[in-house]
Length: 239
Image (cartoon, rainbow, N blue to C red; front, side, top):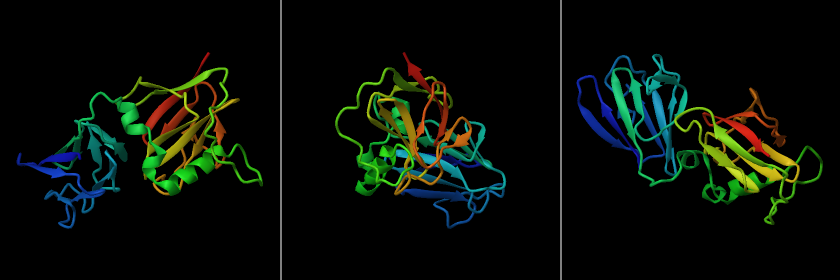
């Protein structure tokens, strides 16, 4: 369980464990974290925690929200992040998770963790090759025939910039539950990305090369740029 260490303008500090899925921050006393500061909007921001991950969202506040000195709209929180709201600072401390890779810790989703209904929806969407009247088959459990090349993702933004993930599995699910979730499938003719909606998947589709993808799976090409859940990645084919 993570927590926020809040320091107000007078220098007083207080810890707020993130025990709830949704923790609101603002000037009004009905917020979970009430900040007595005229520079803070009534309902300024919210921290949403799902499983062990938390992300911060600005609620269209008047003066905005900053993380580590940069203005944000939505931001996945990492251990040590410093949030600035008005004259207050809120330091995020996450749970220690050993040597687990930061990128995998924040971006890789195990479908089983999302519930049976979500997993069923993911499988149907990821298996659909293109529009057509026939129902899409479920994702096969048998190994996918080896593709002539291997795909991988390289993180191009944020604290995990430069980290790489090899796409060796038939299905890799990426994103943040409730924000934006996508699946990348490995097929005999290459790699495809598909938006996964439904419970916990969010409604906004991933962006590839500056444009939202369609309902159907989109084939990825070498050096495609993917924007997903606040992270920019480059898709590469390794010959």
